[in-house]
Image (cartoon, rainbow, N blue to C red):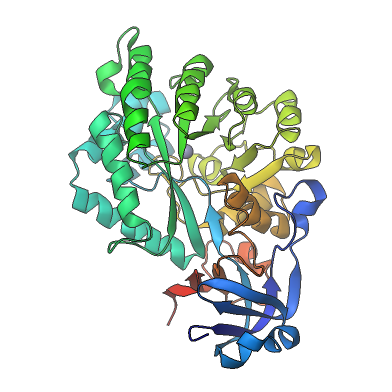
Length: 424
Ligand SMILES: [Zn+2]
């Protein structure tokens, strides 16, 4: 094959090979191979394993070789929860919070999610695209090859749809493509928009989502998932249930923001509606964890939020893993509560603040994150037949990826066999 590529010289190849998703002790089984090699053709992995064996493959003889010089290779990272498209940072609010302002005071002074809504509505398509494209490039530079991206700063028909169309343009298969695969989620139910902040307004807005926004997104094929922020001051369990039923009827699977700042019953709802994922979970109860462990719902934990907001409480990773739940990690990249693009940083936080092992953290942002996006058969591990999505790290051992916190050691990222990011 003309386009065959053989990667050798990997001191450690972390494959994550095996059944997906991973639960319990299996989460830490990462399938590390010393002196590993990966053979790629037509964007797919043809063979992966010990170098001597891979080199004997007939395709290897005609392949272009790249010697990685003793670096570590992992599956491309999968970021299962981001708010990728936004118009401006909220650094002013960051400083106000450090000075002691509460969330309510900041919101009253014009900050919070609604300030991101105002900024997005006022921004041009070009400005939004440029910002999101730059973020995708930085994510790729940190080893990310697939990103889930939510709307939720438009909060009206035009701007929610506009955000989804932008995500389609930034995904693969268009001239503006970033190289990173984008999984689009409609989060029209992020907060109640300003136009509906009157008694009964939240239900009127939910009506609008169900009757207009969801059907339009589904008709244009713009979203795979729909999401609701179930929280005091956002949406109730009953409102979320309506949105998920409407979404499901249109072919959009649920994802749920739940139990982030208080326990509101979102986790239980996620199990009830067989959601693809339930995200945050900082305030999940023992009963929530037991029922999640018995379900197929992925628990996506977002330690960047607790870190950025300076909160003492993180999601109960150990308890979820022990109970047998499917856990994943994501950045929750957003301008208000987690302005990071780095999954390695999320891994560092998961290790030191949530006591996950480096192996568990890596599995949580590769194979299990891929599962949460319904893509575990195609991405998330380095196995023959899967997409050649890989990250190469300038470290001696995969544990050094979270260990060297706050510093990016990713030197090369491949999506379907194509280099999308590289340090010269
Ligand atoms: Zn979020």
